[in-house]
Length: 466
Image (cartoon, rainbow, N blue to C red; front, top):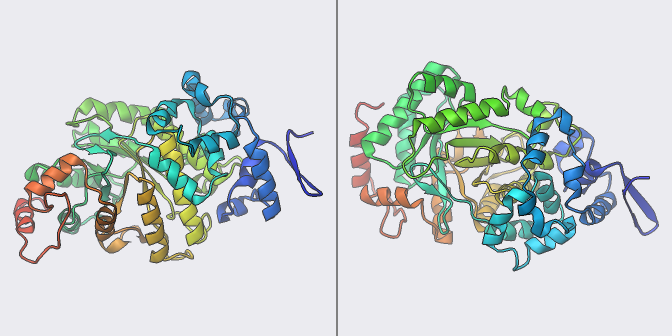
């Protein structure tokens, strides 16, 4: 007889194992329906949540949802678990843990001390018992600070990845987008380019372009070409100015293998980037992106729901002390998150889980044009995430990425958030914006007239770079 069963009225609901409980307790989404693991009714979903609420947290240490012997991500999660850090909550059930997280006892300092004692499955389970406002309230209490050339994640700060993608990697087009973003106060998280070509020579050219601009402007920011980790390793071997190493990661060994990576190659790249010593205020050198549905799309999900697997990807990221992590929440498409409601929920879940696991969590607030979502949905998610204390978002010219063909957030969206919540850029970057005449003494970017002196100063520094 299964350990996981309950009755609602005259109906008894039984679940095969902990993996089944997690899947059936998840809010409805298209990816879990595609995988055939979604709750068959609202009643079954409620029953699963009743059962999940009574599961002791320690069960997640004894019942692996992806077999230990088959999966290096599971081995990482179990072998790195800190029993001493876990002790304050070790006697709790998932439901008790959820209630405790929302209590005044779970302060910022207490949550920070708990990080190493939590597994992804524990935090994913707690999230399934939470309303959206619960996810926001708890995530806001989490504080994760990282640094490279500037310091990200401090209280009262809100950062932006400047994303100057171009469909042909044209240097002038990339440089124009960088200038546009800087004049609107964006770029403190990273200036990060998704290359149209995965060739190593093109990676080298883009790295040198960004580093040349950074040096000309004496800018305390970091750059990254979001190419495959093995290409970045090759670029470092050729002496390229690599600040951050990028890689997409997932929550199972098989899914990561589909990306052409494993933990060993990530460790090699992490050590290589740190050995360059290019950071000035810190040495967090990794940048990871994730997204619900990646394991399912690789047929590497082991029957586990996509949100729990997303949380497991954060265990991979946590292993390497990254500067930045973000979930590209609506990018994979409506097969996994069908509409605005599902995207909003997933974004809040991912941010909550990442922050609780100790990650500098950002969100690419985005959707593809064939999803049942629009910019109003993204405005809602953006504002909710800012209330939840999101570390950073994307800044794309006009919110329309013309290379990746999806809708994200714009430089002006970042201005909206900073003004609405009274937030400022990373301190070192803010000081530079003020020196350049882009930001005022309060760290805010005013309206920019056509003859703006900051624009002229930056343009003069671009001569010969593009």
